[in-house]
Amino acid sequence: MLSNLPDEVDVLVVGMGPGGSGAAKRCAELGLRVIGVEKRAEIGAPKRCGEAISRHGMTERIGIEPKGPWIVQEVHGAIVYAPNGTSIKVDYDGPEGWVVERKVFDKHLASLAAEAGARVIAKTEASGFRRENGRVKVTLKSGNESKEVTSKIIIAADGVESKVAREMGINTFNKLPDICAGVQYEMAGIKHTGNMIEFFFGNDTAPGGYIWIFPKGRGVANVGIGIRKPWAKKTALEYLDDFVQSRPELKDASIIEVNSGGVPVGGFLTDAVDDNLIVVGDAAHHVNPIHGGGIPEAYMAGRLAAETASEALKARDFSKGFLKRYDKAWNDQRGTRLKKILKLREVIETMSDDDLNWLAEYLKGDDLVEFSRGGSGLVKLGKILMKKPRLIKLARKLL
Amino acid sequence: MIKVDTDKCLRCGGCVGVCPVSALELTEHGIKCSGRCTSCKSCVNFCPVGALSIKDD
Image (cartoon, rainbow over all chains, first blue to last red; front, side):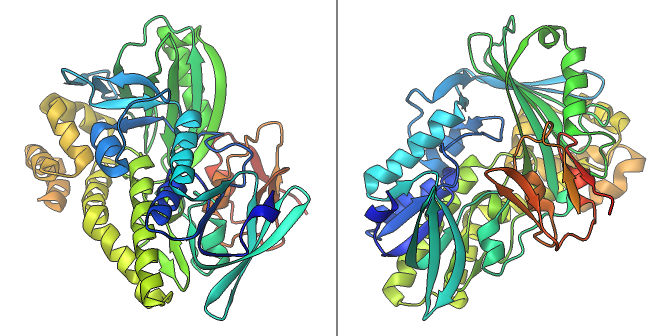
């Protein structure tokens, strides 16, 4: 099948998760010759996340209508639990988000790219990146076949492993406090799943992160955890198993899928470009640092990368200096806001369970929504922390 | 060098993302560790399912 591919393209996208598909689709729409390769045999599998996407993420950042077989559950609100069980509820009249089936959703995004004119090919690995005469030569391998392709620009969307960026000169590795270790079960036979997503916090429950239960309809839910070192004392799997055992609604439910992964929550790469290279999505740590979601961020980054690639082609300039405009576009549209959210999380993560329980008494659902958006939440939290003398120092970081 | 417990490993590749010297690779046959490994233990401390350990020489 590789023999059918062109020898030369404008853009080669490596990794066909949401970031890669967003990039490939936009490249094709802009008239660029683009190939998107995915090393796994199936796009979207194995999934590595909680599968929930907000209304804004879906309709604005990704820019698609929430309709199709990949929607498995409307989300009408959220319940956030403090370490002592105190809960804060966010309630909406209608759907403000959706839980998707990633395996179906990611394939849908890839097929949108193909429909726009991109050539997409699964079970194909790209390696041996070498810059020659202002272009990049790459070896594609699929089974016993291999093929050399020359591309002007490489869009690296190969996830947290980020092999492409590393091979091409950007060390994208994550320090331990900057990455969540995640494990996630798909569970079935749960008596009541409803339409609320639930979050559980606490230094004994999920140090440096949280546990989630996201309903997927018909008694099925995505139940997962993200934790971070140095706060964690055991593995993510052990924390998750302890939680499942402690919950009456889960302990006798069935586990129908197990996944693990790393979520880069420590803030995005400030330098996500090099000569002939643009890095997007998890590989560039494009993740909301407070909840770890990154599907809309990756898709949006992919689109911005494609637009930069198109401008670079017009200018016939694929240098790092020219591609820097991608970093600026990302900062303007999303990055600056995510930096604020990171600051907020850095304050929250230094708080003890007692502090969190105390704080939960003062917060309403709307405040939590603001926190996740990085809006007026910072000032609000700062003002609340000022009430407790021990937390004034933290409050000052926010005000 | 890193030893991988293949019974525990879910092949998620998260450890590759925490290796400061790019010594790890996720291949079709699982996680492979190259000679560049400095035994810094980042991946061991990170692994969500406790599948990694330092191999005794």
